[in-house]
Image 1 (cartoon, rainbow, N blue to C red):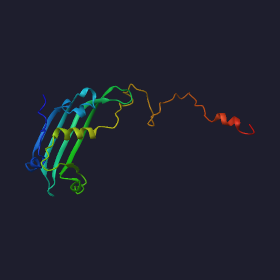
Image 2: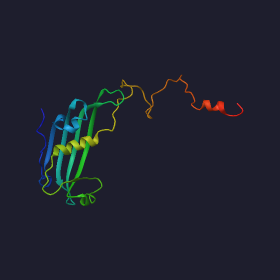
Image 3: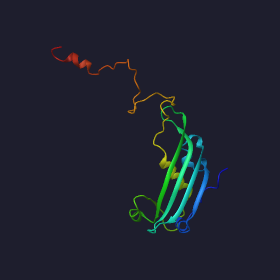
Image 4: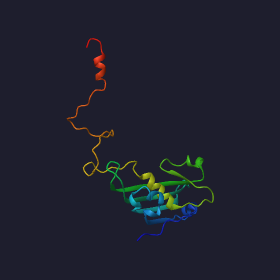
Length: 175
């Protein structure tokens, strides 16, 4: 059902020179850090990656990474479906000095000389970066308490709050 994982020891500069292309479907369980962030480690990851060299002779890794899975709703603590998607555009550079010279649209991927890169980890990093900070069901679908955006529980309209300073009013001279 699933394709083989991406290369675990890839020379990205050689792959970019050869304009390598990868299109894979992975079980989320093959990406351990990502699997730990989703419900039961279940999901299908689709990755479409192209390596190449642009007009400015910058080696790049470009493509899309997506996964349909389930995460925990932070309001009701029940599983909820989610689609995570990331457009990838990484410039393959030697060091941070070269990274500063990349076009603004590219994020750096620093790879030392003769360093081999696990493309599965690159896909995993992109998925983790694309995950929302907190996930919630739509309010009409959530089994949790309704909360204001400030995070306070919604109080019944009939409940009147007591003023904590009302005792001070009795101490005021002339009362």
